[in-house]
Length: 421
Image 1 (spheres, helix red, strand yellow):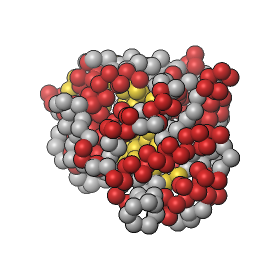
Image 2 (image 1 turned 180 degrees about the horizontal axis):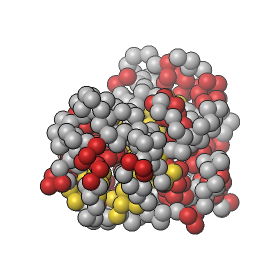
Image 3 (image 1 turned 135 degrees about the horizontal axis):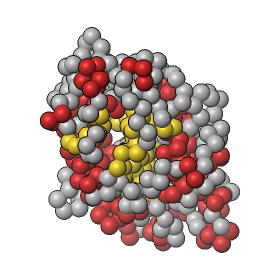
Image 4 (image 1 turned 30 degrees about the horizontal axis):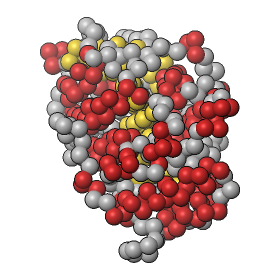
């Protein structure tokens, strides 16, 4: 791993060998004032890696062909959690139903990429770059959204706003493709593996590069906030990660994804200036033994929905300023295969959660599941480009109105938004 300043600045991202928790005392840190100068909304992105089976996640239980094509893995009508008389949730998504009923959770079905690739690698790359079919894109759509946000700020606000080093962050070992670009981003995973000099072991290579980046850059942002941010990271090393306590009654699943969602909540509540956060969750590639009400997919969905619901409740009043969007590289075949699973498909379902989301509704045009309505005779067809959903999220949440910059070639227009935010 290269650790010189040029490497980190060229990639526009800093992968810190991160943190398992951000203690609540950081709300009193010197960064609080800087964060308070930007009290805007925050965007959280969750990537479901492996291609989730949208048809068993948000079930079109009134489609007769759904049951004909899935004789052993379809969700029985009497066990679907009804949403609107046509669609229903997989029973393992029970934690989502109150959020839907309260009008905070919206669903966009038959959404996905216009690119027809069935390769996990290519499809994920295209979704994270935000340029389907174009492999030469070097940065990610969320990084460009933050750049567009800066351009959208009026001059007076731009002079008063000072972003912190926690502006763009990912929970994980490295900065994802989604956040690659000229806006610096950090990746956090384990506080005990990050040392920054002073007492204790020698600084790690990543920490040394972090210090060098702040010391050498001529950027006004880093000179004004870098020293305080670095001090805050030093404080993390000596903090007890277990001291953070979620809101009363909130329990996160004891899983990697549950831990990541808990940490994002901690970072948001600590007033560190977070504006965009990213995490991912794997385990969606269900080629074999997918299961129906129970089984492999059901277990993944329980963890997925319980972690996000705990995150929402943990934020309390702060949840009003949050928009969370989920996405997966593509869906799965409408028909089950010979091993009780599903193969790589096309359209999928996205969830959008937030205080300003017009939830309690399934958005998007439903293409149908009759044989002649399927994409290439095998998949749910895409009727809503995933960039349409993300474009509305960045415009309404981050104020990134230059959508041609965020999603070049998509020709997005705000008057064509689904109006779910």
